[in-house]
Image 1 (cartoon, helix red, strand yellow):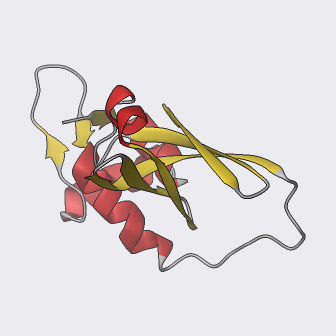
Image 2: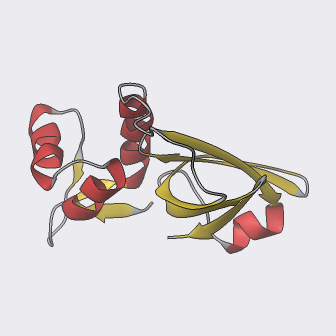
Length: 129
């Protein structure tokens, strides 16, 4: 299962390191016990990303260009037959992409994994983070 340092978790959620630490202290987010630096479980982080995205307004005031990259957390991987549906939460942005099952397996995508969704026109390209 992927895990992230506090600074990485903060970047993925668009908050400060102190906010992540506060959420750990209050139980909103759990840290994983380890001998090294404190880290956060990727699956728990993905669940929190979905929860806080509902609290965030869409802050864009203008149209977005045709080419965009969204760094976020995988919140759903549904592989059936030759196709896979991948969902990513990037701040307040929720992205869904259908890719081949082989690509999803090759990228080793799982809930809580860091991923980048590249959008051009109507295509969403997924790469592992």
